[in-house]
Image 1 (cartoon, rainbow, N blue to C red):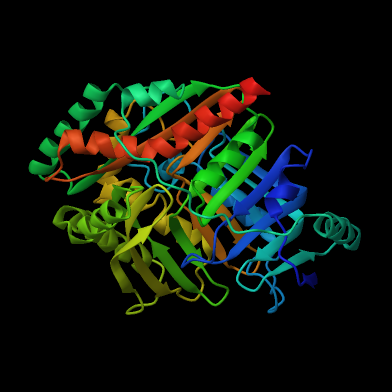
Image 2 (cartoon, helix red, strand yellow):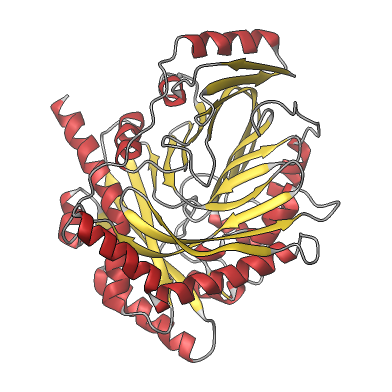
Length: 456
């Protein structure tokens, strides 16, 4: 394994956006170092891939990941990912983990059930240290990657932009060119129905989402330019395969595993919009921190995450070092917790995926019954949204996000989802407003990209 260090942090997105290959995989951390890390990754020169469609047996995903594995010990110096797989898992993989959950009758979503690619070269940028790493076994490909890195501009951290203010509702969404699959009254009825199910003891919490669609002429790369600038997030991604583009600005980690077996998940539950007025923004942050309802939502998911990690971690190792901490992102404040454990001997990345997928913050608790409800009532299958994007290393390490704040583009058709947790204390109007708050930055990015395309 060749591992080159270059004492200059380059802009990986500048390289990725110019690649002509149909397979592009950028795991993007465009801002300053955060609790979620400081490294971005770009896969170059695809070699092998795993593609499992939605009509296939989900068990093929785990079999395929095992087949593509190349167990090795990577160089201790350098980035966490030096060789391995980059790709995504769709939400519906849950049927290969919890077969008791019925399949939704909604139309099949775009994309695959799973798509991972092994690349000849991994280029990594460590923004904290200010360096770039080039890792690969093929000397010719490593030299080609070095040429791309040498000609790339220097990386500059994206600053959090000024926050939008005011109400963002259905009319504003439509002005951006997007149309909901579920009308506002229909979503509110789902919230009310969920509260009835909670009162009946079916579950404690359920995450309801809704889909929005648009037809766009904007190039996906131009759209991602705008989206990442308006909503820089530490677990972002740009994936391209054939006509499918995934434009992700997620702040949420599903699960990470270090080469030494340290496991971490960081569930998000609890949201407030940002404000351009500093005093109002501080008030929103403090109100989120003090909200009994939001803390209850978060704590329920933390308990679920502890149980998930307990399936694969050593007895007594699972702990919650951070509970209900407010973290501020470009468009929203979030309530975030951290759950950690130590992997049991003999367990690996696929075992962790089986234990943790899909993320509890996107299902509810108890997880299986919440997923049953989701399959019954949501008018769209989720596809890549609510799934996971990230990497699985050959040394047994892994880092996967939860796919939120994401645009899925297939040709000129674009879709996105937003959602929120429903508990016994939920108000249907407030829950609908939360989905709109989360939709704002995505929708306005679509509108800006479309306007730029028309002017061009």
